Image 1 (spheres, rainbow, N blue to C red):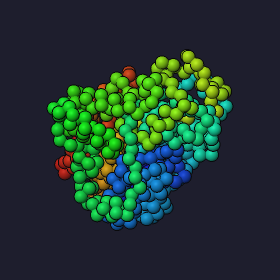
Image 2: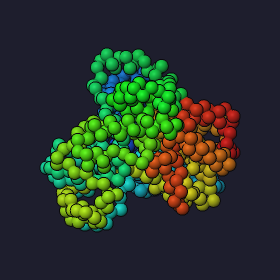
Image 3: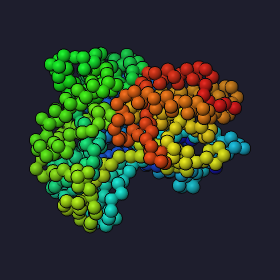
Image 4: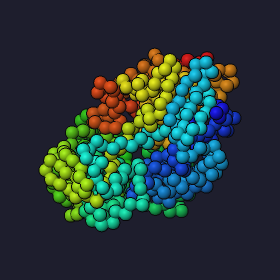
Length: 527
Protein backbone atom coordinates (compact mmCIF):
# COMPACT_ATOMS: atom_id res chain seq x y z
CA UNK A 1 0.00 0.00 0.00
CA UNK A 2 1.45 3.33 -1.10
CA UNK A 3 1.42 6.07 1.55
CA UNK A 4 0.97 9.68 0.37
CA UNK A 5 -0.09 13.10 1.53
CA UNK A 6 -2.69 13.33 -1.24
CA UNK A 7 -4.32 11.25 -3.95
CA UNK A 8 -5.86 13.11 -6.89
CA UNK A 9 -8.49 11.37 -9.04
CA UNK A 10 -8.41 12.49 -12.69
CA UNK A 11 -5.75 13.92 -15.02
CA UNK A 12 -7.62 16.69 -16.80
CA UNK A 13 -7.14 20.42 -16.34
CA UNK A 14 -7.84 20.08 -12.61
CA UNK A 15 -5.76 17.00 -11.87
CA UNK A 16 -2.68 18.20 -13.74
CA UNK A 17 -2.57 21.57 -12.01
CA UNK A 18 -3.37 20.00 -8.61
CA UNK A 19 -0.43 17.63 -8.95
CA UNK A 20 1.89 20.44 -10.01
CA UNK A 21 0.77 22.68 -7.15
CA UNK A 22 1.06 19.97 -4.51
CA UNK A 23 4.57 19.14 -5.64
CA UNK A 24 5.51 22.82 -5.59
CA UNK A 25 4.30 23.04 -2.00
CA UNK A 26 6.25 19.98 -0.84
CA UNK A 27 3.47 17.36 -0.62
CA UNK A 28 3.75 13.78 -1.84
CA UNK A 29 0.97 13.21 -4.34
CA UNK A 30 -0.24 10.79 -6.96
CA UNK A 31 -2.84 11.15 -9.73
CA UNK A 32 -4.94 8.14 -10.73
CA UNK A 33 -6.42 8.31 -14.23
CA UNK A 34 -8.73 5.83 -15.97
CA UNK A 35 -7.55 6.84 -19.43
CA UNK A 36 -4.28 5.99 -21.12
CA UNK A 37 -3.31 9.66 -21.38
CA UNK A 38 -3.88 13.06 -19.83
CA UNK A 39 -6.71 15.39 -20.79
CA UNK A 40 -9.79 14.33 -18.85
CA UNK A 41 -12.83 15.48 -20.82
CA UNK A 42 -10.60 16.29 -23.78
CA UNK A 43 -9.08 12.80 -23.73
CA UNK A 44 -12.42 11.01 -23.84
CA UNK A 45 -14.48 13.32 -26.06
CA UNK A 46 -12.90 12.65 -29.46
CA UNK A 47 -16.10 12.75 -31.49
CA UNK A 48 -16.09 14.47 -34.90
CA UNK A 49 -16.40 18.23 -34.52
CA UNK A 50 -15.49 18.35 -30.81
CA UNK A 51 -14.51 21.91 -29.99
CA UNK A 52 -14.43 24.36 -27.06
CA UNK A 53 -16.98 27.18 -27.08
CA UNK A 54 -14.80 29.57 -25.05
CA UNK A 55 -11.96 31.44 -26.82
CA UNK A 56 -8.75 29.44 -26.63
CA UNK A 57 -6.67 32.21 -25.09
CA UNK A 58 -9.18 32.34 -22.23
CA UNK A 59 -9.68 28.57 -21.94
CA UNK A 60 -6.12 27.98 -20.76
CA UNK A 61 -3.97 28.04 -17.64
CA UNK A 62 -2.94 31.38 -16.15
CA UNK A 63 -0.67 30.17 -13.34
CA UNK A 64 2.57 30.53 -15.31
CA UNK A 65 3.27 33.54 -17.53
CA UNK A 66 6.05 31.63 -19.32
CA UNK A 67 3.56 28.96 -20.37
CA UNK A 68 1.23 31.68 -21.66
CA UNK A 69 3.99 33.18 -23.78
CA UNK A 70 5.38 29.96 -25.23
CA UNK A 71 2.09 28.42 -26.32
CA UNK A 72 0.40 29.78 -29.45
CA UNK A 73 -3.21 28.89 -30.16
CA UNK A 74 -4.18 28.22 -33.77
CA UNK A 75 -7.90 29.05 -33.73
CA UNK A 76 -10.27 31.32 -31.88
CA UNK A 77 -12.17 28.26 -30.61
CA UNK A 78 -9.83 25.29 -30.44
CA UNK A 79 -10.81 21.82 -31.55
CA UNK A 80 -10.28 18.79 -29.33
CA UNK A 81 -6.94 17.70 -30.84
CA UNK A 82 -5.35 21.10 -30.16
CA UNK A 83 -6.61 21.24 -26.57
CA UNK A 84 -5.31 17.72 -25.95
CA UNK A 85 -1.98 18.71 -27.50
CA UNK A 86 -1.85 21.66 -25.09
CA UNK A 87 -2.51 19.46 -22.05
CA UNK A 88 0.11 16.96 -23.23
CA UNK A 89 2.53 19.87 -23.47
CA UNK A 90 1.68 20.94 -19.91
CA UNK A 91 2.21 17.39 -18.60
CA UNK A 92 5.62 17.22 -20.27
CA UNK A 93 6.68 20.79 -19.48
CA UNK A 94 6.19 20.29 -15.74
CA UNK A 95 7.32 16.62 -15.74
CA UNK A 96 4.00 15.38 -14.39
CA UNK A 97 3.67 11.99 -16.08
CA UNK A 98 5.73 10.10 -13.50
CA UNK A 99 3.15 11.13 -10.91
CA UNK A 100 0.18 9.76 -12.87
CA UNK A 101 -1.01 6.17 -12.75
CA UNK A 102 -2.75 5.64 -16.09
CA UNK A 103 -5.37 3.05 -17.11
CA UNK A 104 -6.39 2.71 -13.48
CA UNK A 105 -9.79 3.51 -12.05
CA UNK A 106 -10.47 4.38 -8.42
CA UNK A 107 -13.26 2.08 -7.27
CA UNK A 108 -13.55 2.76 -3.53
CA UNK A 109 -12.34 5.06 -0.76
CA UNK A 110 -12.80 4.40 2.96
CA UNK A 111 -12.22 6.92 5.76
CA UNK A 112 -10.37 5.37 8.68
CA UNK A 113 -11.39 7.10 11.91
CA UNK A 114 -8.49 5.68 13.85
CA UNK A 115 -5.68 6.72 11.52
CA UNK A 116 -7.58 9.78 10.22
CA UNK A 117 -6.63 8.82 6.67
CA UNK A 118 -8.22 7.44 3.52
CA UNK A 119 -7.71 3.94 2.15
CA UNK A 120 -8.25 4.06 -1.61
CA UNK A 121 -8.72 1.01 -3.83
CA UNK A 122 -8.38 0.71 -7.62
CA UNK A 123 -9.48 -1.75 -10.27
CA UNK A 124 -5.89 -2.89 -10.82
CA UNK A 125 -5.40 -3.91 -7.20
CA UNK A 126 -3.15 -0.97 -6.32
CA UNK A 127 -4.15 0.63 -3.00
CA UNK A 128 -3.23 3.88 -1.33
CA UNK A 129 -3.10 5.19 2.23
CA UNK A 130 -3.53 8.97 1.95
CA UNK A 131 -4.25 11.88 4.22
CA UNK A 132 -6.23 13.83 1.62
CA UNK A 133 -8.50 12.62 -1.19
CA UNK A 134 -8.93 15.20 -3.96
CA UNK A 135 -11.59 14.52 -6.59
CA UNK A 136 -10.67 16.14 -9.91
CA UNK A 137 -13.18 13.94 -11.72
CA UNK A 138 -14.77 16.66 -13.85
CA UNK A 139 -18.34 17.88 -14.10
CA UNK A 140 -18.99 16.25 -17.48
CA UNK A 141 -17.28 12.87 -17.35
CA UNK A 142 -19.90 10.22 -16.55
CA UNK A 143 -21.81 9.64 -19.82
CA UNK A 144 -25.45 8.62 -19.88
CA UNK A 145 -27.15 6.23 -22.29
CA UNK A 146 -30.93 6.40 -22.71
CA UNK A 147 -32.94 3.37 -21.69
CA UNK A 148 -34.34 2.40 -25.08
CA UNK A 149 -36.20 -0.90 -25.50
CA UNK A 150 -34.35 -3.43 -27.61
CA UNK A 151 -31.05 -1.57 -27.82
CA UNK A 152 -29.27 -4.82 -27.07
CA UNK A 153 -30.70 -6.23 -30.34
CA UNK A 154 -28.97 -3.68 -32.56
CA UNK A 155 -26.23 -5.33 -34.64
CA UNK A 156 -24.37 -2.25 -35.85
CA UNK A 157 -21.92 -0.05 -33.97
CA UNK A 158 -23.27 2.00 -31.05
CA UNK A 159 -21.27 5.15 -30.36
CA UNK A 160 -21.37 7.74 -27.56
CA UNK A 161 -19.74 11.11 -28.09
CA UNK A 162 -17.87 10.74 -24.80
CA UNK A 163 -16.57 7.24 -25.69
CA UNK A 164 -15.95 7.64 -29.41
CA UNK A 165 -14.56 4.74 -31.45
CA UNK A 166 -12.62 6.34 -34.29
CA UNK A 167 -12.24 2.98 -36.06
CA UNK A 168 -15.92 3.06 -37.08
CA UNK A 169 -16.31 4.35 -40.65
CA UNK A 170 -19.62 6.13 -41.12
CA UNK A 171 -19.10 6.87 -44.82
CA UNK A 172 -22.30 6.25 -46.73
CA UNK A 173 -23.98 4.69 -43.71
CA UNK A 174 -27.53 5.18 -42.48
CA UNK A 175 -27.07 6.78 -39.06
CA UNK A 176 -29.56 7.43 -36.29
CA UNK A 177 -28.32 10.18 -33.96
CA UNK A 178 -29.82 10.95 -30.54
CA UNK A 179 -29.39 14.33 -28.85
CA UNK A 180 -28.75 17.87 -30.03
CA UNK A 181 -27.13 19.56 -27.08
CA UNK A 182 -23.63 20.97 -27.47
CA UNK A 183 -21.93 17.69 -28.41
CA UNK A 184 -24.78 16.59 -30.65
CA UNK A 185 -24.80 19.87 -32.57
CA UNK A 186 -21.08 19.54 -33.24
CA UNK A 187 -21.31 15.88 -34.26
CA UNK A 188 -24.23 16.34 -36.64
CA UNK A 189 -22.46 19.19 -38.41
CA UNK A 190 -19.27 17.14 -38.76
CA UNK A 191 -20.76 13.90 -40.10
CA UNK A 192 -23.68 15.15 -42.21
CA UNK A 193 -21.71 15.27 -45.46
CA UNK A 194 -20.08 11.91 -44.78
CA UNK A 195 -23.06 9.68 -44.07
CA UNK A 196 -25.61 8.41 -46.55
CA UNK A 197 -28.71 9.13 -44.49
CA UNK A 198 -28.95 10.84 -41.11
CA UNK A 199 -31.95 10.74 -38.79
CA UNK A 200 -31.65 13.09 -35.81
CA UNK A 201 -33.78 12.31 -32.75
CA UNK A 202 -34.43 15.29 -30.49
CA UNK A 203 -36.33 15.80 -27.25
CA UNK A 204 -35.41 19.34 -26.19
CA UNK A 205 -33.73 21.47 -28.86
CA UNK A 206 -31.07 23.98 -27.86
CA UNK A 207 -30.58 27.60 -28.77
CA UNK A 208 -27.41 27.70 -30.88
CA UNK A 209 -25.64 30.76 -32.22
CA UNK A 210 -23.27 30.80 -35.21
CA UNK A 211 -19.62 30.51 -34.26
CA UNK A 212 -17.18 32.85 -35.96
CA UNK A 213 -13.96 30.86 -35.72
CA UNK A 214 -11.09 32.42 -37.65
CA UNK A 215 -7.53 31.20 -37.56
CA UNK A 216 -5.44 33.34 -35.25
CA UNK A 217 -2.84 35.38 -37.10
CA UNK A 218 0.62 36.16 -35.73
CA UNK A 219 -0.67 39.63 -34.89
CA UNK A 220 -3.66 38.17 -33.04
CA UNK A 221 -1.41 35.90 -30.97
CA UNK A 222 1.03 38.68 -30.16
CA UNK A 223 -1.81 40.93 -29.00
CA UNK A 224 -3.27 38.14 -26.85
CA UNK A 225 0.09 37.42 -25.21
CA UNK A 226 0.68 41.08 -24.48
CA UNK A 227 -2.79 41.41 -22.99
CA UNK A 228 -2.77 38.30 -20.80
CA UNK A 229 -2.19 40.03 -17.42
CA UNK A 230 -5.08 42.49 -17.78
CA UNK A 231 -7.36 39.88 -19.34
CA UNK A 232 -6.77 37.33 -16.58
CA UNK A 233 -7.52 39.90 -13.90
CA UNK A 234 -10.89 40.67 -15.49
CA UNK A 235 -11.68 36.97 -15.82
CA UNK A 236 -10.92 36.17 -12.17
CA UNK A 237 -13.38 38.74 -10.89
CA UNK A 238 -16.15 38.81 -13.50
CA UNK A 239 -19.45 37.02 -13.04
CA UNK A 240 -18.88 34.24 -15.59
CA UNK A 241 -15.06 34.47 -15.68
CA UNK A 242 -14.99 35.70 -19.27
CA UNK A 243 -12.79 38.53 -20.48
CA UNK A 244 -15.85 40.30 -21.92
CA UNK A 245 -18.19 41.87 -19.37
CA UNK A 246 -21.97 42.24 -19.82
CA UNK A 247 -22.94 45.50 -21.48
CA UNK A 248 -24.92 47.90 -19.35
CA UNK A 249 -28.57 48.64 -19.95
CA UNK A 250 -31.91 46.89 -19.87
CA UNK A 251 -33.35 45.18 -22.93
CA UNK A 252 -36.91 46.11 -22.02
CA UNK A 253 -36.01 49.79 -21.63
CA UNK A 254 -34.06 50.00 -24.88
CA UNK A 255 -35.57 51.53 -28.01
CA UNK A 256 -36.96 48.59 -30.07
CA UNK A 257 -34.97 49.43 -33.20
CA UNK A 258 -31.76 49.85 -31.24
CA UNK A 259 -32.44 46.65 -29.28
CA UNK A 260 -32.91 44.70 -32.51
CA UNK A 261 -29.69 46.13 -33.91
CA UNK A 262 -27.73 45.29 -30.77
CA UNK A 263 -29.04 41.73 -30.59
CA UNK A 264 -28.35 41.21 -34.28
CA UNK A 265 -24.74 42.34 -33.77
CA UNK A 266 -24.33 40.05 -30.76
CA UNK A 267 -25.77 37.05 -32.64
CA UNK A 268 -22.55 36.41 -34.56
CA UNK A 269 -20.05 38.05 -32.20
CA UNK A 270 -19.17 35.16 -29.88
CA UNK A 271 -20.73 32.24 -28.05
CA UNK A 272 -22.19 34.11 -25.10
CA UNK A 273 -22.38 37.65 -26.51
CA UNK A 274 -26.13 37.40 -26.93
CA UNK A 275 -26.60 36.82 -23.20
CA UNK A 276 -24.25 39.65 -22.33
CA UNK A 277 -25.63 42.30 -24.69
CA UNK A 278 -27.80 43.64 -21.85
CA UNK A 279 -27.03 43.22 -18.18
CA UNK A 280 -30.51 42.04 -17.15
CA UNK A 281 -31.15 39.18 -19.60
CA UNK A 282 -30.49 36.47 -17.00
CA UNK A 283 -32.50 38.20 -14.26
CA UNK A 284 -35.48 40.03 -15.74
CA UNK A 285 -38.30 37.99 -17.30
CA UNK A 286 -39.48 40.74 -19.63
CA UNK A 287 -36.02 41.54 -20.95
CA UNK A 288 -35.22 37.86 -21.36
CA UNK A 289 -38.47 37.30 -23.26
CA UNK A 290 -37.48 39.98 -25.77
CA UNK A 291 -34.09 38.34 -26.38
CA UNK A 292 -35.69 34.88 -26.53
CA UNK A 293 -38.16 36.11 -29.15
CA UNK A 294 -35.28 37.56 -31.18
CA UNK A 295 -33.40 34.24 -31.06
CA UNK A 296 -36.45 32.31 -32.22
CA UNK A 297 -37.04 34.72 -35.10
CA UNK A 298 -33.38 34.52 -36.05
CA UNK A 299 -33.46 30.74 -36.13
CA UNK A 300 -36.64 30.77 -38.23
CA UNK A 301 -34.65 32.66 -40.89
CA UNK A 302 -31.87 30.06 -40.73
CA UNK A 303 -33.83 26.80 -41.00
CA UNK A 304 -35.26 26.32 -44.49
CA UNK A 305 -37.90 23.63 -43.83
CA UNK A 306 -40.81 25.02 -41.75
CA UNK A 307 -41.49 21.60 -40.23
CA UNK A 308 -37.86 21.19 -39.18
CA UNK A 309 -37.93 24.75 -37.87
CA UNK A 310 -40.96 23.91 -35.74
CA UNK A 311 -39.08 21.03 -34.15
CA UNK A 312 -35.67 22.74 -33.87
CA UNK A 313 -36.62 26.14 -32.48
CA UNK A 314 -36.73 25.90 -28.68
CA UNK A 315 -40.01 26.61 -26.93
CA UNK A 316 -41.07 26.62 -23.32
CA UNK A 317 -37.91 27.88 -21.64
CA UNK A 318 -36.02 31.19 -21.46
CA UNK A 319 -32.88 31.90 -23.45
CA UNK A 320 -29.87 31.01 -21.29
CA UNK A 321 -31.67 28.72 -18.84
CA UNK A 322 -30.24 25.79 -20.79
CA UNK A 323 -26.68 25.96 -22.05
CA UNK A 324 -26.38 28.28 -25.04
CA UNK A 325 -24.60 26.33 -27.77
CA UNK A 326 -22.42 27.35 -30.70
CA UNK A 327 -22.78 25.91 -34.15
CA UNK A 328 -20.54 25.69 -37.17
CA UNK A 329 -22.65 24.24 -39.96
CA UNK A 330 -25.29 22.54 -37.80
CA UNK A 331 -28.31 24.28 -39.31
CA UNK A 332 -26.80 23.91 -42.79
CA UNK A 333 -26.59 20.19 -42.10
CA UNK A 334 -30.18 20.05 -40.84
CA UNK A 335 -31.29 21.77 -44.04
CA UNK A 336 -29.94 18.82 -46.05
CA UNK A 337 -32.49 16.66 -47.86
CA UNK A 338 -30.80 13.47 -46.62
CA UNK A 339 -31.20 14.60 -42.99
CA UNK A 340 -34.47 13.79 -41.19
CA UNK A 341 -35.59 15.12 -37.80
CA UNK A 342 -37.71 13.24 -35.28
CA UNK A 343 -39.18 14.86 -32.18
CA UNK A 344 -39.41 11.99 -29.70
CA UNK A 345 -42.09 13.81 -27.72
CA UNK A 346 -44.31 13.47 -30.77
CA UNK A 347 -42.85 10.16 -31.95
CA UNK A 348 -41.61 8.21 -28.95
CA UNK A 349 -39.20 5.36 -29.66
CA UNK A 350 -40.98 2.04 -29.13
CA UNK A 351 -38.16 -0.37 -29.98
CA UNK A 352 -34.71 -0.84 -31.46
CA UNK A 353 -34.36 -3.73 -33.88
CA UNK A 354 -31.28 -5.27 -35.42
CA UNK A 355 -31.15 -2.55 -38.07
CA UNK A 356 -33.69 0.17 -37.28
CA UNK A 357 -35.12 2.58 -34.75
CA UNK A 358 -38.89 2.22 -34.60
CA UNK A 359 -41.15 4.97 -33.29
CA UNK A 360 -44.87 5.17 -32.72
CA UNK A 361 -45.23 6.57 -36.24
CA UNK A 362 -42.52 4.97 -38.37
CA UNK A 363 -39.34 2.96 -38.76
CA UNK A 364 -35.94 4.49 -39.45
CA UNK A 365 -33.23 2.21 -40.90
CA UNK A 366 -29.86 2.34 -39.17
CA UNK A 367 -26.40 0.95 -39.82
CA UNK A 368 -25.03 2.83 -36.79
CA UNK A 369 -26.45 4.63 -33.76
CA UNK A 370 -24.85 7.66 -32.10
CA UNK A 371 -25.75 8.90 -28.65
CA UNK A 372 -24.96 12.50 -27.74
CA UNK A 373 -27.13 12.21 -24.66
CA UNK A 374 -24.98 13.96 -22.10
CA UNK A 375 -23.73 13.11 -18.65
CA UNK A 376 -24.72 12.58 -15.06
CA UNK A 377 -23.40 16.10 -14.64
CA UNK A 378 -21.38 17.43 -11.71
CA UNK A 379 -21.89 14.41 -9.44
CA UNK A 380 -21.94 11.23 -11.56
CA UNK A 381 -18.21 10.53 -11.60
CA UNK A 382 -18.00 11.06 -7.83
CA UNK A 383 -21.00 8.83 -7.07
CA UNK A 384 -19.48 6.13 -9.28
CA UNK A 385 -16.76 5.68 -6.64
CA UNK A 386 -17.81 3.79 -3.52
CA UNK A 387 -16.82 6.53 -1.07
CA UNK A 388 -17.45 5.80 2.61
CA UNK A 389 -16.94 8.62 5.07
CA UNK A 390 -17.34 9.12 8.79
CA UNK A 391 -19.66 6.62 10.50
CA UNK A 392 -20.15 4.58 7.33
CA UNK A 393 -21.80 7.39 5.36
CA UNK A 394 -21.72 6.73 1.62
CA UNK A 395 -21.58 9.63 -0.81
CA UNK A 396 -24.20 8.20 -3.18
CA UNK A 397 -26.67 7.83 -0.30
CA UNK A 398 -25.85 11.23 1.18
CA UNK A 399 -26.54 12.89 -2.19
CA UNK A 400 -29.81 11.02 -2.72
CA UNK A 401 -31.60 13.99 -1.13
CA UNK A 402 -29.76 16.41 -3.42
CA UNK A 403 -26.10 17.13 -4.17
CA UNK A 404 -24.52 19.20 -1.42
CA UNK A 405 -21.10 20.56 -0.59
CA UNK A 406 -19.79 23.53 1.35
CA UNK A 407 -18.61 26.03 -1.28
CA UNK A 408 -18.53 23.14 -3.72
CA UNK A 409 -15.24 22.18 -2.07
CA UNK A 410 -16.00 19.76 0.77
CA UNK A 411 -18.83 17.51 1.95
CA UNK A 412 -19.88 17.21 5.58
CA UNK A 413 -19.17 13.73 6.92
CA UNK A 414 -16.26 13.18 4.53
CA UNK A 415 -13.13 14.57 6.22
CA UNK A 416 -10.04 15.51 4.22
CA UNK A 417 -11.94 15.07 0.93
CA UNK A 418 -12.08 17.92 -1.59
CA UNK A 419 -14.26 18.22 -4.68
CA UNK A 420 -12.77 20.45 -7.38
CA UNK A 421 -15.67 22.36 -9.03
CA UNK A 422 -18.18 20.36 -6.99
CA UNK A 423 -21.89 21.15 -6.54
CA UNK A 424 -22.42 24.57 -5.05
CA UNK A 425 -19.50 26.18 -6.94
CA UNK A 426 -19.59 28.13 -10.24
CA UNK A 427 -18.17 25.12 -12.15
CA UNK A 428 -20.12 24.67 -15.41
CA UNK A 429 -21.60 28.19 -15.30
CA UNK A 430 -18.16 29.73 -15.67
CA UNK A 431 -15.04 29.43 -17.74
CA UNK A 432 -14.23 26.23 -15.90
CA UNK A 433 -10.45 26.55 -16.24
CA UNK A 434 -10.59 29.77 -14.19
CA UNK A 435 -12.75 28.03 -11.57
CA UNK A 436 -10.41 25.02 -11.54
CA UNK A 437 -7.36 27.18 -10.88
CA UNK A 438 -9.13 28.99 -8.06
CA UNK A 439 -10.11 25.70 -6.39
CA UNK A 440 -6.68 24.12 -6.83
CA UNK A 441 -4.95 27.13 -5.32
CA UNK A 442 -7.42 27.31 -2.43
CA UNK A 443 -7.00 23.60 -1.62
CA UNK A 444 -3.21 23.79 -1.81
CA UNK A 445 -3.15 26.82 0.50
CA UNK A 446 -5.50 25.02 2.91
CA UNK A 447 -3.22 21.98 3.11
CA UNK A 448 -0.18 24.19 3.66
CA UNK A 449 -1.97 26.12 6.42
CA UNK A 450 -3.01 22.86 8.10
CA UNK A 451 0.56 21.59 7.98
CA UNK A 452 1.91 24.83 9.43
CA UNK A 453 -0.62 24.70 12.28
CA UNK A 454 -0.16 21.00 13.04
CA UNK A 455 -3.71 20.08 12.00
CA UNK A 456 -4.41 16.75 10.32
CA UNK A 457 -8.18 16.80 9.69
CA UNK A 458 -10.53 19.28 8.02
CA UNK A 459 -14.23 18.72 7.44
CA UNK A 460 -17.16 20.85 6.34
CA UNK A 461 -19.48 21.87 9.17
CA UNK A 462 -22.98 20.48 8.35
CA UNK A 463 -24.61 23.77 9.37
CA UNK A 464 -22.31 25.81 7.15
CA UNK A 465 -22.88 23.39 4.29
CA UNK A 466 -26.66 23.64 4.65
CA UNK A 467 -26.54 27.43 4.85
CA UNK A 468 -24.36 27.63 1.73
CA UNK A 469 -26.61 25.37 -0.31
CA UNK A 470 -29.66 27.37 0.79
CA UNK A 471 -27.88 30.55 -0.29
CA UNK A 472 -26.99 28.95 -3.64
CA UNK A 473 -30.63 27.92 -4.09
CA UNK A 474 -31.91 31.41 -3.35
CA UNK A 475 -29.44 33.07 -5.70
CA UNK A 476 -30.27 30.64 -8.51
CA UNK A 477 -33.96 31.40 -8.20
CA UNK A 478 -33.29 35.09 -8.69
CA UNK A 479 -32.30 34.18 -12.27
CA UNK A 480 -33.82 32.38 -15.27
CA UNK A 481 -31.52 29.37 -14.85
CA UNK A 482 -33.83 27.06 -12.86
CA UNK A 483 -36.73 27.60 -15.28
CA UNK A 484 -35.71 24.87 -17.68
CA UNK A 485 -35.35 21.14 -17.34
CA UNK A 486 -31.60 20.97 -17.81
CA UNK A 487 -28.52 19.09 -16.70
CA UNK A 488 -27.79 22.00 -14.35
CA UNK A 489 -30.49 20.47 -12.15
CA UNK A 490 -29.71 17.59 -9.83
CA UNK A 491 -32.44 15.18 -8.79
CA UNK A 492 -33.32 14.06 -5.28
CA UNK A 493 -34.55 10.61 -4.31
CA UNK A 494 -38.14 11.89 -4.20
CA UNK A 495 -37.91 13.65 -7.57
CA UNK A 496 -37.24 17.24 -6.48
CA UNK A 497 -34.78 19.38 -8.41
CA UNK A 498 -31.64 20.93 -6.94
CA UNK A 499 -29.80 23.56 -8.97
CA UNK A 500 -26.17 22.47 -8.77
CA UNK A 501 -23.90 25.33 -9.96
CA UNK A 502 -23.47 28.54 -7.99
CA UNK A 503 -24.74 31.49 -10.05
CA UNK A 504 -23.78 34.33 -7.72
CA UNK A 505 -20.73 35.15 -9.84
CA UNK A 506 -17.17 33.88 -10.04
CA UNK A 507 -15.74 37.07 -8.56
CA UNK A 508 -18.15 37.08 -5.62
CA UNK A 509 -17.53 33.37 -5.07
CA UNK A 510 -13.76 33.88 -5.07
CA UNK A 511 -14.14 36.65 -2.50
CA UNK A 512 -16.25 34.36 -0.29
CA UNK A 513 -13.67 31.55 -0.44
CA UNK A 514 -10.88 34.00 0.41
CA UNK A 515 -12.89 35.37 3.33
CA UNK A 516 -13.48 31.84 4.65
CA UNK A 517 -9.74 31.16 4.51
CA UNK A 518 -8.81 34.48 6.10
CA UNK A 519 -11.23 33.81 8.96
CA UNK A 520 -9.39 30.62 9.87
CA UNK A 521 -11.44 28.39 7.55
CA UNK A 522 -14.79 29.51 8.84
CA UNK A 523 -17.43 26.85 8.29
CA UNK A 524 -14.91 24.03 8.52
CA UNK A 525 -14.11 21.82 11.51
CA UNK A 526 -10.35 21.47 12.02
CA UNK A 527 -8.48 19.14 14.31
